[in-house]
Picture 1 (tube, rainbow, N blue to C red):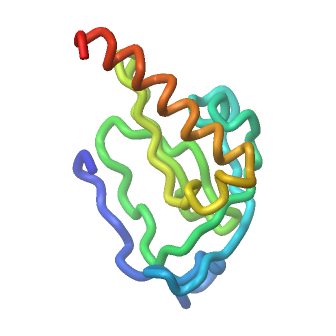
Picture 2: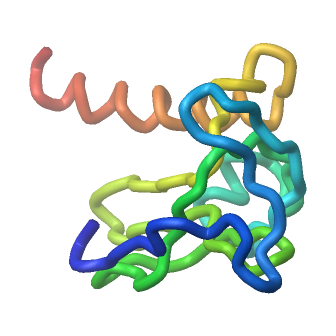
Length: 126
């Protein structure tokens, strides 16, 4: 995204914690640290959400204009933001859809996405 790239396979690398198994192989719940005063922190209502992960790749090089706004304890990037004033773009590495039904913190991410999308849609006359 925007010229960035991924580490294609993080399991087993020194210092890297468990991030689950992709493709339905089972998730891992862990806490991430979100930078305060970011769009993500405001949307979630916390800077220490517990998230569900199941990925074997991770951001290696952050793309142009993107900002790292959350990390796992092992340093893996868990969320990016595009800090443009005219757009709202937040990307998370975890799977909020896995826990949103019973976790209000992760549900808030979807609520904020919908809230941000509705005015944009209405301004186009749709």
